[in-house]
Length: 109
Image (cartoon, rainbow, N blue to C red; front, side):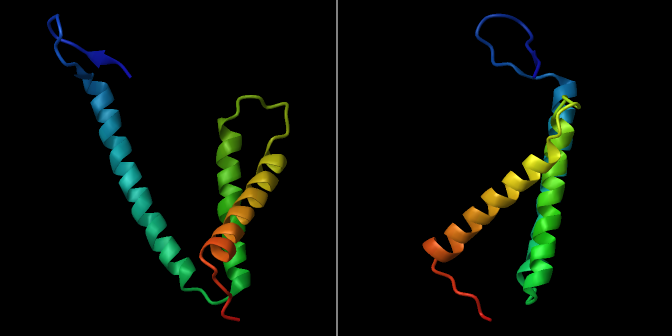
């Protein structure tokens, strides 16, 4: 991030105007995405069908792995499958630990 300082000495500096615009746009996008995720999760938590919940879970992990793949510049290495599998394994382990071990939740089936 570039900083624009006017004058010298021990003055406080702030972000350059272009960076302020990027920060403002990023803030708006983040708030909008969090609201959207909140509505989607509200819908998911109301679903009684475990297969539909697992399908949504897989869909979310798929797109998370896809986002990771998009950030990797090396195209010769197959990264999607190992990333997807490791995300499914770790997310499932965390979900089981939180629901079964920490809060002692039991299925309503």
